[in-house]
Amino acid sequence: MTALYLEALAAIAASLSVLMAGAWAVQQRTGNSGWVDTIWTFSLGLVGAGSALWPVEGASPNARQWLVAALVAIWSLRLGVHIAIRSAGISDDPRYAAFAREWGADSPRKMFIFLQNQGLGSIPLAFAIFVAAHAPGEGLRSSDYLGALILLAGIAGEALADAQLKAFRTDPANKGRICDVGLWRWSRHPNYFFEWFGWLAYPVIGISLSDPLSYPWGFAALLAPLFMYWILVHVTGIPPLEAQMLRSRGDRYRDYQSRTSRFFPWLPQA
Image (cartoon, rainbow, N blue to C red; front, top):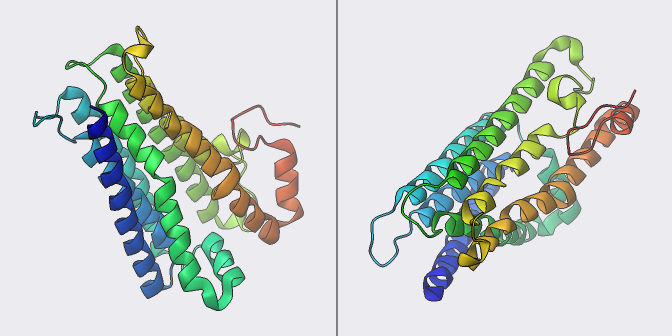
C-alpha cells in the first residue's frame, strides 16, 4: 500500500512541474502573468481529480473517489473561470509585475523557478485530495457528506465575496474607494478565507471520526488547510496584495486595516 502512495506522490509532483512550466510559457508569450493563476487552478483541479480516481490494484473508482473528484472539479472550474475572466480584462497581474520589476533582466529565469516552486508547493494540496479519496471503505460515510458540504460552502462563500467585490468596483461612484460592504466588512480578504475553509473538507473526509488511527495516511490531508493558510496569509496571498493596496490607496486602506479583521471574519471595529 505504501508503494501506491509513493507512486501517486511522484506522479503528482511530475504533473504539476510540467503544467507550471506550461504556465511559464504562456506568461512569457502573453506578458500577462494573470494567466499564471488561471493555469495553476485548472492544473491543480486536473491533477487533483486524476489523483482522486487513481486506481487501486486495478479496481474501478469507488463512490468516495468519484465524490472527491467531482468536488475538486467543481472547485477548479468555478475559481478557474473567475480568474480567467479577470485575467482577460487586465494587461498584467500587479503582484507578479512587482516581482518582474524587482528581478529585472533576470525575470524570465526567476519566474520559471518561482512557478516551479509554486508547483512544488502545490504537492501537499493534491496529495491531500489523493489520501482523502482513498480512505478505506466502499460506501459513503457521514463524514464524506460533511466534507462535501464544507467544500460547497467554501465555494459559495468565495463566489459571493468575488461577486460583491466586482459589483463594488463596477459602480463609478466607488472609484478610488475601498470595498467594505457585505462580507468585506467582516474580513479584508473574505475570498481567501472561504478558499481556505473549503480545503478543510479533505481532512474531514480522510480522517475517520470513529477510528482515526485505522487510516494513518488520512492525517496527511491536514496538509491542505495548513499549507493553504500559510500560502494565503503569509506568502503569495495577503502580503503582496496588501502592499499593492497600500501603494495605490494609502491612508484609505490603512483605515480599512485598522477596523477590519485581516483574515477570519469578525465584527468590524467602529
